[in-house]
Image (cartoon, rainbow over all chains, first blue to last red; front, side):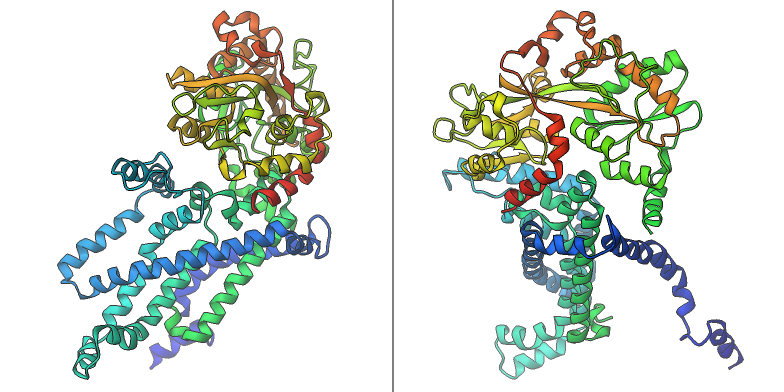
Length: 286
Length: 334
């Protein structure tokens, strides 16, 4: 008991364990919160105090279009990633551990390769004169090259490929925690495989899907390189637009406003998810 | 608060801050900066004893952050000329000390109170001979998808060039380009919008043409020159070639201003300009430089194609930069 009270009094009323989080919190505070506040202030002070940057932002058809496009791309990427990741995660969850760790290694390996390199590799594959189109034309399957790059298809392919591990990892954790007996029980009660998936597996894996989905969605919102290289100008995403506004046009006020709106929307989404799935589960059901 | 943010930003940028007998030169990286290092920095180091540190790529946002925060770590920066004119107006640049930098032989098109020419270049029409039948001879051909089918590639960002090309293709005479008729230009660009692949950097433009991914393109002449040097089968039309320039500037508050001015004198000297032009295929801004170059290197320069050459109006662009950019991105993202 004396030891216990000592550890409590050392961090003045906070729950035990808070002290260990302090370095990380300070890091985030100094290098995230402070710049974000500075950003917000700049958006309402540059070039003069007022909301003119926000008025310009929402009054500009370009920015509104780029915003909508950014959310469209992030949504499509998240949906496709979930569909693609689920079977892999399920397989990993039920696989013998030795084999599972090999597959796991392969998935992780892709994350160790430079992002730009991987994106350029996709360019080589997806171009009109790229490997895929040449092969398909060579085999006589198509006559004209498929438009796989400089459009939404290109962005989606390139980004889903990068996002898959971020979806698979939390999902495997959730799926492994599901008691296999629940599925056997469903089968015993006469449920078809699809029925068991729809009514047992899917609801139970929702926390993992929600956690991975949110991570993928939020990461996609801020993506820069992949959409810039694999998309067309009509798929321009907010990050690229902000970079142009700040770096080339030197309009920091407008760039800050755009960045802040994106951040606010992302936070709002997270808050909604907390309400829907609950705080514990939103973190990945850990 | 502005100070806090710019201070934070600038704090991140101090990695290459130079000491007393050093200075920092910043350019765009790639083959261009390599040639600048070899042609300017190396001989300058040898003759002056001042060490030239290389940094890059040029980033106008960083430049502004440094000047705003009063922590300038770049001493000489290679920038586009229309940006330099605007930056000078915004008070971001140090006036050039023409007592140190000899002015007499500098091409007056590309040097002014706050900038010394770095090199000048032309946008030319280039095509992959394997992907095109026939020879396009004018910008109008790039808008003729019936006669010349295939993807065409243009510079992605809002900058002097594409708007002018669209207007020329639409029949506007070269001497009536300015003030730019943006409505007319975008209407013309609409006719080929779905056939355009945009390039955002020099290497990308080369890759698109060399692979045939784009059959034609508006390219920097130096990049076409490099493709031809590599033996790629690329055609080039100099008809209506459009000149623009990069210039060297010294940011306001640069810590090694005196070394910077000496560096500018060396870079813009006939010898420095001749060496760089020979290595890059871009044109010298010093009128005495060509005399120091081999004859066949001179032939590859925009100077050899002054007939039909059109000077993009950097002052007009500096004046209307933001307005055109707003229209440009609105059209592009539509």
